[in-house]
Image 1 (cartoon, rainbow, N blue to C red):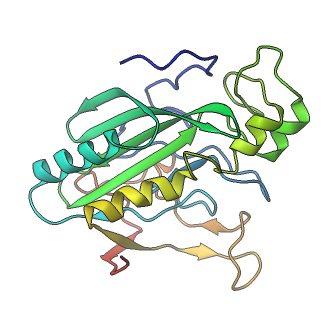
Image 2 (spheres, rainbow, N blue to C red):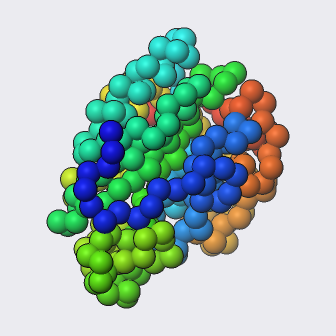
Image 3 (spheres, rainbow, N blue to C red):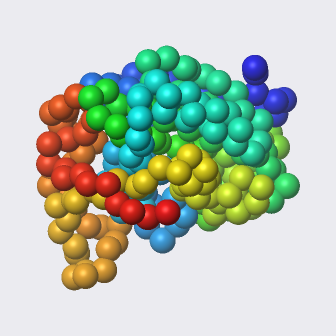
Length: 236
């Protein structure tokens, strides 16, 4: 099914680049660098940067059954859902929702890794969004967009869309709603964090090493980097 009619930024490309989509050596792409003090427009279970990271999920039972259940819940998300890729435990969809009276499109990827009972995910808004987009003014094309994003544009409507308000909700909340409906647990990921401001997490914290594919981490079974220790949590 094609996207509904609208002036949308172009879809991301597949491959091995910071803003690409797809699975490379067991990893999804990292998120674009977060903008301090602005709402995140990308969330990933394999990018441990503050503001972008969310815990992966653990499931019970056969992988095929988990993939089928995950696919069913993703396709039932609010909005107009279009399948872009669906193979080998990997599903990517484009989801169009309306926020502050304007259409926005999010590319959402979920991946049941090979060799463990874990689901990794990444979701990113096309065009970025965020409050800084208001500085670019109203798009002459009348489309959605944001700063530094494919498709340009901007305007106050797109800026407020970056807050994750409206019918779609924030990317992290929408993904976690899927996890809750499935009854799956979050996976605790212990990260080697060096906080710039003591006990407070900030976008300027550093990690050693990164878990993302940009770091070229060694993957055991396609499930994650060797620097991470993962045990199931018991969060509902």
